[in-house]
Length: 332
Image (cartoon, rainbow, N blue to C red; front, top):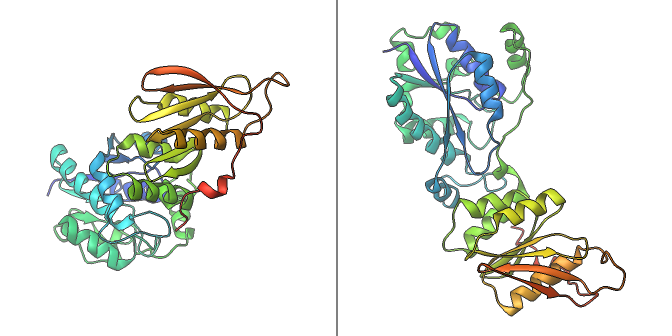
């Protein structure tokens, strides 16, 4: 086997340590980091790669990944996090990358028992089986608790220099980081928005009510207040000036309609889906519920309205509002 491995690098402590352990045995590393619709921008992975002295490739997932999230074979965790299915999907992509860069095996920072949705021993076995990588996937932090892999059997890696860590305690990991001279020790984090219940409600709402969806729809689950107006329409309100500007930037003809306060302070609103007199009225009432008085006392509130490439203004009766609780997303 070649002394070259692909390493999955999130930027977290575990993946950094896995690389350091294998580097110490003279193995060339090519790092791979994934950018999904639901994780951070991978600044941590880029910084970690520079610290470790390894090249890193950032790979973005496509809409096939959304199908994995919608119908995971192995189910969800506490929210809408299909962790086992997600790992299988990513390892399968990494296997193709491994062939492309001429590496002969792969390493991961997984620790047995650290994450209940993807790192119990049974789940690691499922991942190995479903990706077909069993003998080529090395987990340096827990290797001694797992069957020997091909790089170990063939003498590319010295099994005695790998580790047998398990559980959720970070004590051994932090000590190892100090031993390697690491100055920046990342705090534990999933880095995935799908583990957050509120995001989970929004993702489930899309799967339940939309026959078709794109990455655009899921970019919008990351911020704002979300309300379901009908089976075919929902509205998102900004929570800050920054979020209002984001919503305005996401306006897309044919997919959404946009409301922007003209002469008063309040949230911008992006209505997604079917625009009817009823959904338009509900969106305006919800917007007004979170608005402040007009800039000029006594003026009738006015909204700038954009839909289908056309722009107009809408006057709103003073005092117009609605109870947002009646339109909150399903909480299960």
